[in-house]
Length: 78
Image 1 (tube, rainbow, N blue to C red):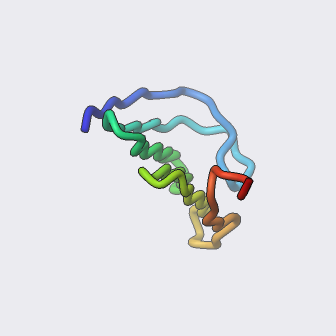
Image 2 (tube, rainbow, N blue to C red; image 1 turned 30 degrees about the horizontal axis):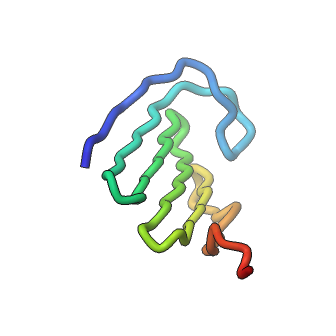
Image 3 (tube, rainbow, N blue to C red; image 1 turned 90 degrees about the vertical axis):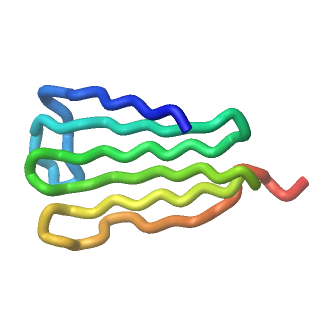
């Protein structure tokens, strides 16, 4: 997997604050993509796309409260 880190200086965190932080992205040549965002306030957002097309998305505030927790498929079933 090849990863990259990009620092940002002002972005809206899950708690509603404008803060700095880091975007992390790792992927392979077969469809696996991990995107994680870490905010200075302690909030975190993740999006993991797996080889089978399924996606896990999770957003957590700095106080530990889960704002969003979804697992699903990129495919519409047709």
